[in-house]
Picture 1 (cartoon, helix red, strand yellow):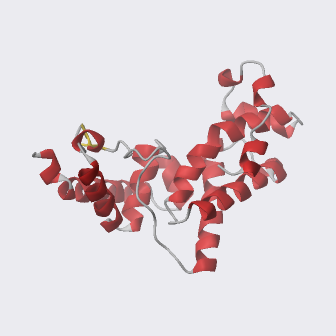
Picture 2: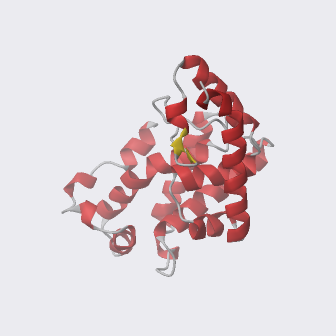
Length: 204
């Protein structure tokens, strides 16, 4: 994470029992002028947003810039949030819109593979079996990476948001502005495609 994001997240340790506060209570406190509440929200979401936005790009620096812009908007547009929707839906929507704006500028619409910052494969559940457990060696990891790139972007993004970001169908629907039925269909089709591509690893 770049220096700006680290600076934005500094200072949240001074809050009293921050983990007991919901996102919605934190944003309300920030709207009342509590900067520590903002810092705690940054700490909670900066990595999640980076993992999410990174799927739209093959460039980490671009993803970090989009997250930076998102967190700045959180700071400057906090008053726009109304407690009629979950905070996570609101912040992911801002990140998505920023990412799409950047993609339009670059005329590049592809996602990168599903890996954590430590280089580990994301644990996507397919029929009660973790894909991560099916990956036994470096070659298998490289193959999984290739297969993930072959899955259509709309399926991949939906799978990431559901299985890695652990968002509800309702949240994904609001963020992507797509009906829940379509979201479920994309997730299922994405899981099936990925499962089929990795089938020979599971059989080893």
